[in-house]
Each structure stands twice: as C-alpha cells, then as structure tokens.
Length: 138
Image 1 (cartoon, helix red, strand yellow):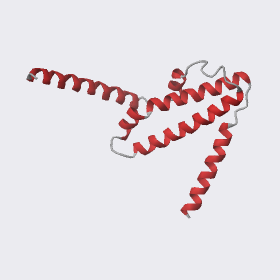
Image 2 (image 1 turned 90 degrees about the horizontal axis):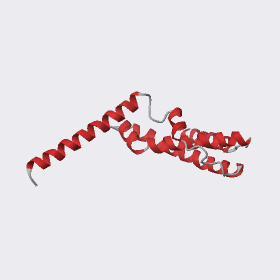
Image 3 (image 1 turned 90 degrees about the vertical axis):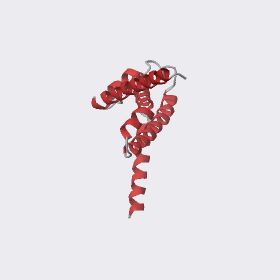
C-alpha cells in the first residue's frame, strides 16, 4: 500500500475520533446524555397502546429491572479510568431508551387509569436487599 494512502487513512481515523470525543464531551458537559427530557424524546409514542394493564405492569417490571441493571453497570464503569467515556459508548444509549420506555409505560397506564404495581414491588425488594446487605456487613 502506498505511504500516502496509509497516511490518509490515519488522518481520517484521527478526525473521526476527534469528532466522537468532542460529541461525548459536549454530551457530558450538558449534564449527561440520559436526562429525563432526552428519554421522553426517544420514547416511541404509542409503543404500548395495545397492551393490557396487566401486561403494562409486567413489561414495566422487566424494564425497571433492566434500568437498575444498566445503572449498576454504569456506576461500576465510572469507577475505572476513562469510565465516563466507557459509559457513554457502552451503556448510555440503552439506558436512555429504557428510561423512555418507562416513561411511555407510565404515560399509557395513566391514560387508561391502570394501577401499576411494579414500582411498589421493586421498592420493597430494594429495601429488603439493602437490609440484607446491612445485616451482612455487621
């Protein structure tokens, strides 16, 4: 391969990397990429309109579990070197989509006057897990 072609490729990759880093930096400087407002924008309106109240509750529970799993992974990644970059690349998009789905589930349930129990059940489970961790620490 001619030397000029290799240099051109290196320059293109360098520019793409700079653009990526600038975009991530702007996103992080703006207070994070997974704000609640952004989640509302990426939610698909009407995504859950054909689900029953019982189905909304089940989907909500699964989605909330996924949100907590992603939040834990993001917290763990932030502890390492380059953690914010890793979070932005690996988890941020999924986390924002999950927040959008939760918002859409709750909005659809409110429109139908559905009683969603997944938040209360998840809070009880989190409290039990916290109490168990405290017991183990002692």
